[in-house]
Length: 353
Image (cartoon, rainbow, N blue to C red; front, side):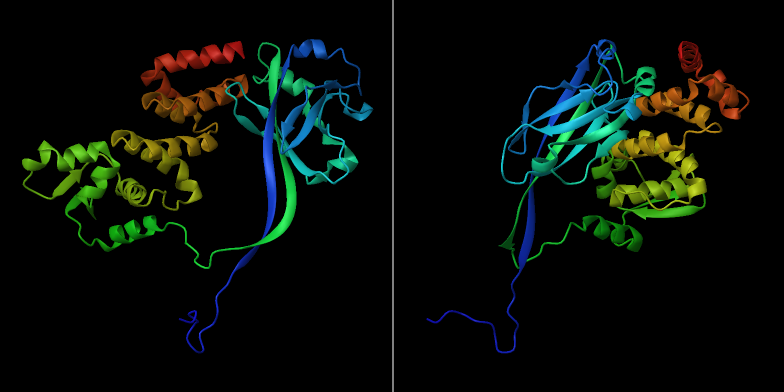
């Protein structure tokens, strides 16, 4: 039997790709006894032990008093190729200062371009961080700090065939969003203030253990109505929470309303045990901490066990300038009356800072 071929007039389908490969690896450089390394003169190097990354051998040059005279107030860091090879070794490096939990600090994370280390031998940052800044920060603990060096080594560019069938990304969230907006199959309603929200018991139960108990548990048997009143939440907040339940993302918010909405949503997420929504609100609220809002956000974080948000507020308020500025706000008055323990912690942190 002859091989099959497309019908007359039908186009042949084929696909290929140009692939630029890369191999990555990283090295953790911990400087222990930092204060003693400051005796090293400007321009002189302390080398790390060699390490393998991307199939090549490297080491890091640490210069506690800068690599040049103009960098004398800075710590300099350079990645160096430790292999003697004739071919080009093209790579990029990312230098990142880590906090005490081992997390990368975006403000002290720098990535080089792609460098031919066979020619340059070393590349990095002469002004990685100012010594004075490091010494006053919490990132220097017990006279030690850690830097992560990510190395990406480029491989030869080549071509390869790719499948003709292209699988699109998941659009499940869109289908669930359509279900919410169309109200098709809705079997429960929520009356929030003057607005009614049709919804689906099974979807709410799958997303929230609180809704599951209320809608599918023993309470359902005694219910004589499919309309559930919600008296202690604004309709806009409940609607935003429903959007997240169905689509796993927040609706768009006006910039001037975002902080207040996020605070209300955090409370709602805690109430209905929507842990991911709660963490999203907590993370976003860290960017809304300011003189006028810090005290109220701190009280919210304390009441709803948001440890990361609480620490961010305490760090902001620990300086005497910020602390003095918020003492006249309504949020500080509320904090004084309702959260005396966190107020004591705040004042203690401010005094020690």
